[in-house]
Length: 456
Ligand code: FES
Ligand SMILES: [Fe+2]
Image (cartoon, rainbow, N blue to C red; front, side, top):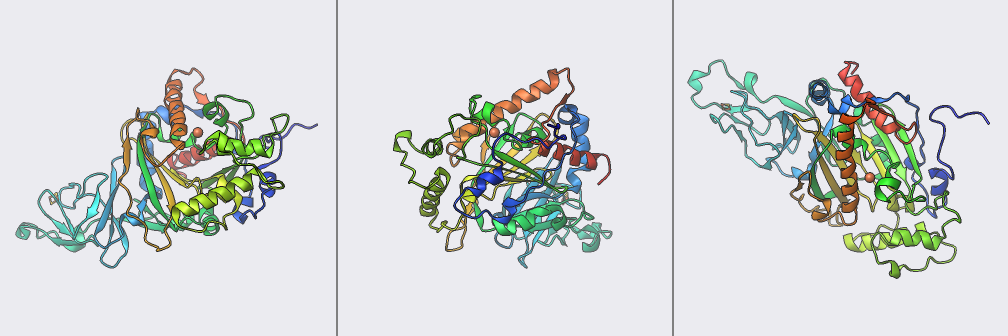
């Protein structure tokens, strides 16, 4: 037998696509797509994570020039509503103007630079009045008033209106780009736009928002969510048979994805698990073991459990989810958009993640974790909740709204601190990645390199 070329080898047993075909429902076309690419197998230097010089280079060459989602449209529903988005030392005030448009401005007064609105603040304003000397700007950013105007003959709305930050909208997310010459948001979204046209998330609202400080570099944090290779050791105590079948995809320069199944038989388990055992393992996630119902004859545990979830979530959110395919109901479907955002279109795992670097310390970052739920039938989403703030040592289980996932996120956080310490003590200088399961990590690193090397 000839040796597979690098990146061609796959886990034993049926592929994710073969498993999805066993479901009693169609698989949406985007989820049938497969797009793996071998991107090399060199080690990734640990200094990419730990170096202060590198962090500064990212602040100089990446963050001021890349599209990043800043808030949701429901944060600024009415004219005058504003939201401050901060990334390192950069800050933008995003505002709904009198015409209903969304605009964004550098959060700095054109007089002597004072921030117009406090970091991470949001609220309502009739106009922007600088707290230092009271220069006033309209919601459109136009300079309206300069107290003691006689002293500023050299200042006018033409020369001293607020500097705009570019804005793009997608699926209820407001994106900003500090570079006026950046490519359009659509080009950056790449495959995301066409895939989500079929998978949907534009009709969702924020049910839960948690902001946690994490003990690692922003890339290490994002990368810890890019592979399911760690599931067996980190989340299942190293138990053989707890690996999950996962497909990894690279869609061009800005989008990667994994899909991993829930409740599919694990080919490494012998004798094979029965459908009843598979249901038992899924049921245990949200119920008592001894309540587990019997899987009806001729039905798979996945289809049975998906029907159960569609009914219970339908009751909880006052909607009919019966049209959701089994995979969209159960599976962990995770799209990554460069540089720092994840979107999950699934019904029972409807998360959104964002990772932002600390402004000065490469070993820390901020993780925004949201759960998005379908907007109620009357079409009016509830107002967005205040983010729950968690510090490095706070457990996710202290926050409401995550249920059993809280303990899982805590397990991931433990790895982050240990990995960061290991980066500094290792004599090996770089991390070695799996060709297939960890390709998304390499994809992120390569794209960051392109910004830092001036290729983008
Ligand atoms: S710095 Fe804003 S009015 Fe003076
Ligand atoms: Fe994890």
